[in-house]
Length: 320
Image 1 (cartoon, rainbow, N blue to C red):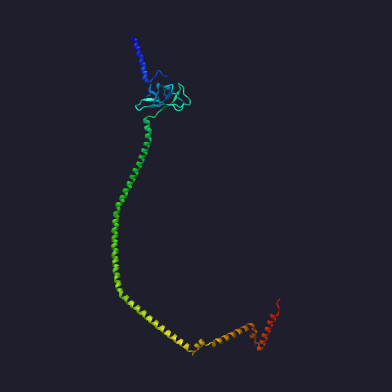
Image 2 (image 1 turned 120 degrees about the vertical axis):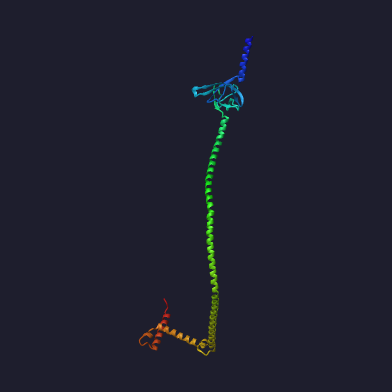
C-alpha cells in the first residue's frame, strides 16, 4: 500500500514537473530543428512563440563540433501550426533576459515536414540597437568636435591677428600725435610767412595808391586830349566838305558842269562809236592801213562795193 502510494506520487510529480515545463501530454506535436552560431543562454523548455503566443517549447540543445561548433536546437511545436519554406526561427530575449524562439511563419508556399530544419536568425538585442543608433550620433559628434576644433583653431589664429592689429593700433596714436605736432609746426611757419607777405603787400599797396591816382589822372588827360583833336579834325573835314558841295551847287566850274550838262557825255559817246567803227574797219581791211603808201579813198570805196556785191550774190544764190 505504501509502495503504491509512493509510485503514484512519483508519477504525479513527473507529470507535474513536465507540465510546468510546458509539456502537454494530451496534445500532438511536430518536431523541427534550427541551427544557431550562438544561442546566448537559451535553455531547454524555453517557449516557442507565434505572435506572442506559446505554441511549443525547446526540447533539446546540442552542440555540433564537426560543423564549426554550431548549436542544434530541437523544438516541439503544436501540430496545428503549419510552417513553410519562408518560416524563420528568431532567437530573441525578453526585457528581464529570459530567452525564447519567435516563429515568423510568413507565406506558406511549400509546407515543412516534421524533422525539417527551419531558417534561423538572431534578433538584435537592446545593446545592439543602442549601438547602431549611437554610431551615427557618435559620428555626428565626432564631426561636430572636428568642426569645433577648426573653429577654435580659427579663433586662435584670429585672436593672434587681432593682437597684432591692436599692437599696431597702439602705435598709431603715437605716430598720429607726431604727425599732428609736425603739421602744427609747419602750419605755424606757413601762417607766419603768410602774415609777413600780407604785411608787405599792404605796405606796397599803400605806396602804390598815389601812383595809381596819378596814372588815372594822366590817362583821363590823354583821353581828353585825343578826343579834342579828333573832334577838331572832324569839324575841319565837315567844313571842307560843305565848301566843296557849295561850289558844286553854284555851277560855275567844270565839275558842276559835268554833273549838270550832258554835252560831254554825248561827245564821248560819239567818239566811242567812231573808235568802234574804225577798229572794225581795220579788222576787216588791214591792207588799207598796212601798205607802204596806203590806199586812196576811191580805192577804199571800190573795195567796199565789191565786198557788198559778193555778199549780195552769196545771199541770192540758192543753197543746195
